Length: 584
Image (cartoon, rainbow, N blue to C red; front, side, top):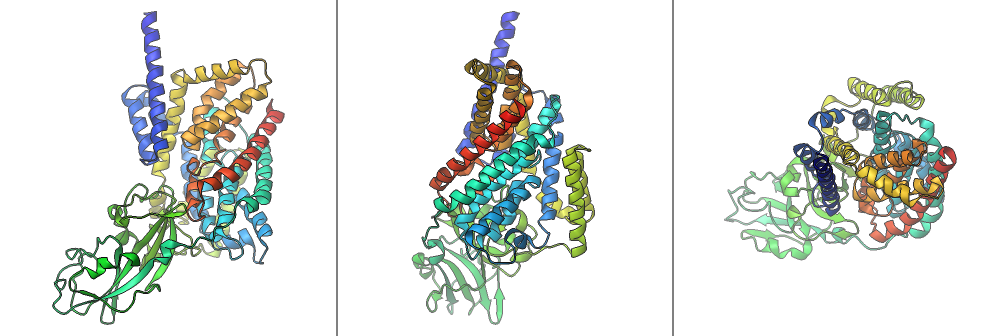
């Protein structure tokens, strides 16, 4: 019987290890959406009995997940407050150094109380339009500062929220000061590093935007007796050209845009195509269509640059699959990823969060309700300007101030406070029920639920004990600081494999077991997991805000490695010294 128990235990541990490695491999490949991978992982651990169904279901309603989803609703309301650009940069023109100082300071404060993805999404546009500084000098520091600023409070990042919730479930209550003191140390060092070093390492590139240089607007006329007459746009195969989009149809004094696939072509119609002039022969080969005049680079409508948002419906799909034109009343002229323009047929390109789309917008583009949840527009403050009236703005600010006071004092559990404010936000119609349904982070809930189950699997399978035993054995005879650093770097390595919340929850049971084995107070080791899991500065795919700014900032991997290495060093030194002095 004992042997059977041992065999079953090793089988469970082995199966758990295989599932974790498969999860890491799938996430690292980047071939599938993160939510889909975690959903598959959750299904696997439930079907194999690695985690009991009742236990798993109870974790999906954990206070941390409730708090994170409530913060998404709250941040949507806060984004409607007027004057964001003025708060960030002021009314007076400042030099590059003073602009960076004020911008990064505002970013740190905002990230302490608002999800950093929302902060970066809101500030990316204003930062991209600064007349005295290029986006290349501002956006990567923005992402790094938002990550560090989130460590000032227990609710600044999803990783901190999840760790705080799991710690409370294990009888360890972390308060605001536990995060604030080491967080201040980290923020000051990262802030000084970015102000002093980033201007030296981030040199704007003078490379011209080939994507826009090659985009022209070609006017063509339907010939008399053309075989295109009387047939729909779809039947004439004008919707699926390789290098051009049919942007407008001019019929007499009427301009039809966007052009529906069921729209029938008539004699004397004029068609406006948008696309790559290098492939103009594609249009010349259409029988019954005559190109008139010379291709021109001036747009018949408005041109926008838009970044695909995190958790957008477009992530992992093609333009054709989501029917982009009908959904947004706009045509995609080009797609950029990082510092390169993607080649090939646009309709077949698998889009990713962080890609920049160059759009020719129709008249209804600005009014589409799904715009804010899927695209961050870089060219204007907001193409669909929705700001709260003055009275509602002050009411929202007052309610948010009360929320912060309750959250920081911890008089009421944070999840209850956040849920209460989210309910008020919807009840006051600062965020409509329809908008709340649209922005509800279903994918994020799946990811966080999977992350909690991952942590539970690491703990129940005995993997946490094995890792903690290895760390304790390796650090025997050394000061506790060495074991603390080992936990920090273990969480940091995990965050390069998983998301930051997943990394924190994976390292959490290891940190708890290590503290018990070394007879140390667990607070320092738990905080080390939260800080280590949010130390993802070296790789663009290590954190979602880094991906968001990669393309609009024209960054390459070398930019992340050079500046990220310096920022990571400052962050790690500040966190480890502060945690050691305060808790050990």
